[in-house]
Image 1 (cartoon, rainbow, N blue to C red):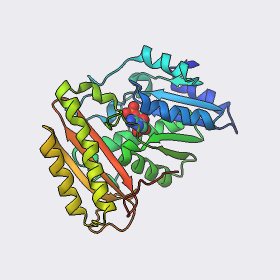
Image 2 (image 1 turned 135 degrees about the horizontal axis):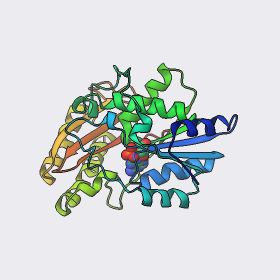
Image 3 (image 1 turned 45 degrees about the horizontal axis):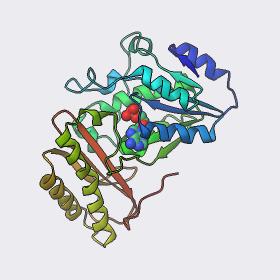
Length: 287
Ligand code: AMP
């Protein structure tokens, strides 16, 4: 595996792979099984696999966890080597943003809901870095986890709006054995919170079961899910929403594909989770 620090060098390498399929997995590092599943899938399909590790300051709000975001580059590199990744692209902030950007990307659709509501400008920062990374790595395919369902929907909109020549692959959420979605931020949880955190995924399943049993009123489902979280955890609910997917529009009566998504705040960790479901409550396969 080659470790590349310079965007220019990465770009030159990618240019050399004309007509060769490149699978790309952008990450913020502190890699876990969720990231691994994306990499393993890319390895199955592409001649060249590139993984980036970059904690993008543009997508963190002033009160968010940019400084204390967990990092362990040495461990990540070992893991990427074990997975036979071809290139680890690990630029510094100075290399990615040598000058203060003279332009900004502003998402106007798919961002007034879910994480976008409280994380103002978050998806503008994501839009900027993903567009830059696509221009640097020039992949044929880019892999994302559907755990970040809104991120997937937003990036899909960018790729369509800008006619970017890349295919997006959305991968299912990898979970701990008790159901908690794997996340680099899970390390922030104390012991009691870790035990409570599984209730987020449990609550979404309660919502799913209601839908499967014929409850089509999204408000009724949302209330039941919220009640479960409030009764079983000390966490504060940031949001709990049912929206069409990937358009992310409000839905009263469920008769199409939806996402049921929640974010809860523990003392030091804000956790998100979701289920992508058909109108009948079955897990939606994303290909
Ligand atoms: P991050 O490092 O958190 O920015 O995540 C990098 C990529 O890994 C994103 O596309 C995430 O959606 C994906 N990812 C993170 N956690 C998981 C998970 N538990 N299961 C599947 N994909 C994940």
